Image (cartoon, rainbow, N blue to C red; front, side, top):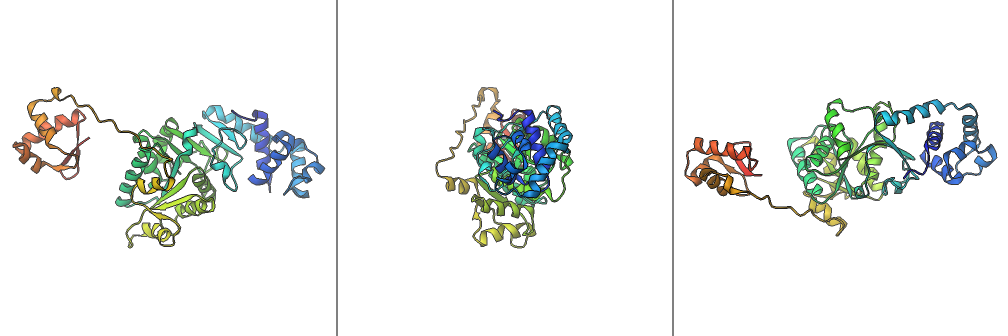
Length: 372
């Protein structure tokens, strides 16, 4: 439930536009006067009583109340909420993310598309390079899938590469995911993630502290990264150079007293220089699977019980049934499978195609097959 009405939120946005008023000073002011409108209506002497507010800042606040320099801009922002099916959460709302509230400089408001749920407190950030290797892609899919099996929300930054894979895998696994933007809620960046952008609010939410129409300038992303780590119990770094943005997320996580995990990589790969350094320096725990992360949190996470898929073998003909029974949990090559069921390779392929259409098996690269 929102603590402030729309007029109060407009006043909050006005305060955030005043030069020199960072998020911590705005928070102190609202806590002191109990509401954003009360801050704007305060006189010079009253404002000077608040910690961190000097003469210059007090004058700027009083001038904003008189001249309303940022009023139209703030009203415009609120007017865009309905158009983009979004909402504003303020630091004082009950729905404001619990762990984000605990960092040093939490945003005083978030624009949100979708829904933040209580269960999202069980979240892990997954970030990394925009140019992952095949190894990086596979390990991201693997660990993300495993974490979703523990009902863990996946937090990332909607960037190309590791971020995109983490969000997409979470959605494919019917898990929840949160994307944190370094731009306005109405700016899709990168543009090729338009479809993913539309899917995330159905399976989680998109959040940003930046106003509508804010472009994805480079200076925005470091502050975006503090929110990624701030929303999460821990951050997993998968492939990054020592100068990569994911290293900033790791730094923020450490500063916020959150767990940091990293996947080791090829010592000759530039994409692994950052992760290997984090492990070598003792700043991150080496992980190769989700269990390595889960163990750090005790019994907080409970794995989903996987229901065995009920197969009605009566719908299969004698050859399909024979082939299906011959396929174990591990992938099997077509030649070996044909030998096991004593059919020719071409005969085997016909029945395998039928089993695949029925959703019982899947074909893999190199003419391998496995059960779904």
